Image (cartoon, rainbow, N blue to C red; front, side):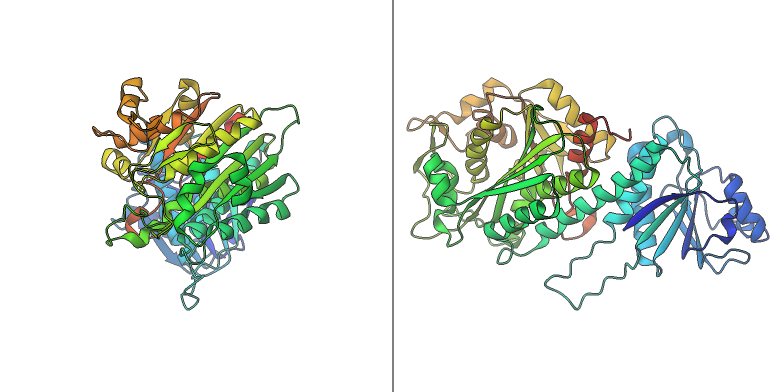
Length: 498
């Protein structure tokens, strides 16, 4: 996918397959829209005077072979009430436009970019969302279903008569990169567990190192992790024939002296629950238990495309959680890399067992900040549903930056408390702590567990159990929270479109 800014005074004769005209609920046409209306002998005015289009947010009307217009079709795109326009409503309207434009035939879509937004929606950010969400919508899973044909033939987006500023050019470049990163994450999440194994994930991480000069990837196997004392991480994969892996994806976009920001992604490529076996219903969805890892790979790919002047390290602990005669049992005690012992009360609380050793491992990077991303608890779905990711942190400034990035990217999170009183629920008579807690608040106590291994740096935890897959009523990975993470990192680098 390519996106460019284009300036023209002959908009009616613009050579494209689809020409998109944005329109608020007041149905007023700007100068570019009026030029098309004039060329079509008032066909737009006649439509707007009818009840066939009301300008509601996300409303779409497609006109084919409009007289006087070169484009094969003209799409009227409703934006709702301009005074009530928000980032969330703009994003939803962009999703509606993306669904339409990627379903239509033709390689080139042109969107009139001269329409004015309000203060809540900066122009450059609005253009970024158009590019990102159209790119995102070109994705269709076909890897194990090659007979499923992708109708999207769109390869080019033109933003017409938007101001040719460096901010706008940067924004649409970012939008394409974010959209691609989301689609990488979705593809990895959607792959079945017999393909996307820990070693498959590590091969994808290595591909980033081959593709981008600023990325160096290293992978640790089980022997190397054992030498480091990662008994907690290794305990998860003991029941599987698949070897556990630890990936380190090092993006050096900033100065060598700059402390890195670290992203840690949970990579359980399939989660049966182990000896604490899950119910059979919907167990197939446990292939999505590596979506945290997938989001790290997608985000690193996006920021490398953008060439962000920042140092970012992605760390992915990956394992397959299976029941067998060698599997970890409830009541077993394992020793983490930190030296803390853990009583494994439930083998289905395995995500925190791989993450805790990864969180100890990242201390060696002396990070500026650490954010882990994990499909960690079903309790998060009970608390927040499928609309917001859960956020917990030991640093209010970091938490506020991530919350702002979620709002600014329309990929929102909601903060939950990380109070000491919850940590007492992890007490164990046989180890330093148990891997599950009694007394409810499962999302919070899971984060409390992780916080025990993140005491030496600023740390935040994103629980994406409710947002990583199954969005918009369809079955499949959503690509969240790549947009949030990209916005967070762009903001740190001074490259945000907000």
